[in-house]
Image 1 (cartoon, helix red, strand yellow):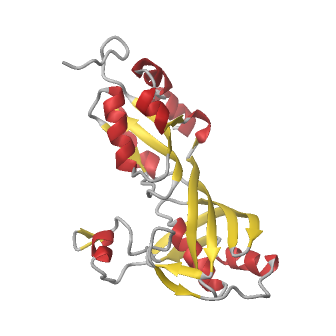
Image 2 (spheres, one colour):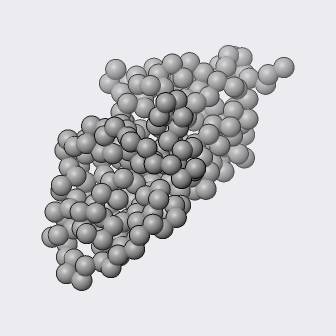
Image 3 (cartoon, helix red, strand yellow):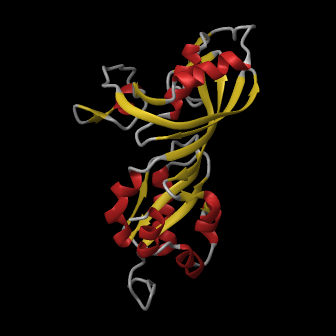
Length: 246
């Protein structure tokens, strides 16, 4: 028999914002939320890799019906790329495939010009380590077998970017981008533009649509807080509509 008693016994509905911890998958967060809220109807909006932290929108109950709408909204990330080292996955979790010296004359102006090239509308080639499917098989499964297959470039958009710090070989940055944008590929491509390669060292999602980390619960909260406290953190569907301007 279920323990659910949200709003007089009904199952919970809405959106719960979670600050994902590193070294766990988005599916791990969903599994924890199911146990914590004692409900099976839980999903998420936009996968974060185990390396990444930050905002994960968890949809609950009838909130799952607007999952695609929430996933389609623009997102903002803060990250750090490491120049001079390229990896198979384009991030710090992948095997090193090439190392090159960072150009000694690399200055802020040249770095800024490389970032400026990847602004506005452009096509991005999805990485092999991704959930995109080729003939029904996720690319990451093919990548695990050492296979590299042809991928279709995707049309993406960068709304804004900012270089937050330069500590060569590392560059800290912020980027606001469209759905389907791969920040690891962004780091890889900027490294190629600079002539030395690069990979994504760390990543944190700070915003998705109108939602930010300000109202997010931690994974520890999700694991340990009383259920009533978590239910009180759920954003109702009418409020979600107001926030989205729908």
